Image 1 (cartoon, rainbow, N blue to C red):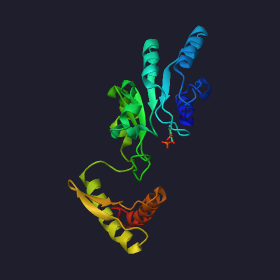
Image 2 (image 1 turned 90 degrees about the vertical axis):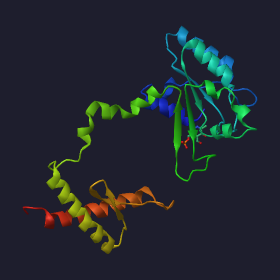
Image 3 (image 1 turned 180 degrees about the vertical axis):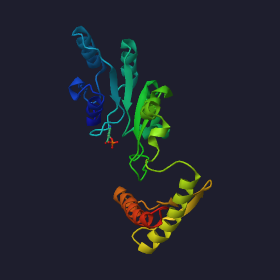
Image 4 (image 1 turned 180 degrees about the horizontal axis):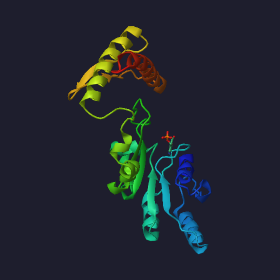
Length: 231
Ligand SMILES: Cc1ncc(COP(=O)(O)O)c(C=O)c1O
């Protein structure tokens, strides 16, 4: 079991201590009868198991848990079945390896890392869920607060404010290019003028993007103090 499972339990508020580690066989694969035993022991102690997690390709040895047997146990006890295929999941794309992951299709959720065997240059953890309703939780803040809560503060709504920001950004583009530390271009988005950062170099780091925003905020504030109507 990868450390991220205990971290996930922490994030959920269950605590890493709620995770039961299961014994493995000679090939380092989870022993289903151990899972069954631990679930029964928890139930007998009044503790409600919520999920069985199988690994499809462990980090240390590449072992693959007996997924059909784990799925059957999870189904019988009415608990979630998750497969951590972060490392090995891409094997389903290879005809000669797919059979090794048999049973993964029974999972309620699967994690796959595209930056491992799919070789994406950017870090990319993927969660697949059987029932897409579960993904709605990602938008819970938006649902709770509404779109208006995410509008930038301090600008009066309306055409005059938009026209001013467009003018400011047009001037800012020239200032940024002359300054030379960053080199954004521009785009028309609908009727609006937009500063555009076209990031295509895989060496670009988050710090570079932050620096672009810092320089733009700095020069933009200076221009704003010169241009703002009524100042
Ligand atoms: C089996 C398994 N699960 C989870 C992870 C966590 O992946 P990451 O934090 O890189 O997305 C890894 C990474 O090595 C892994 O091998």
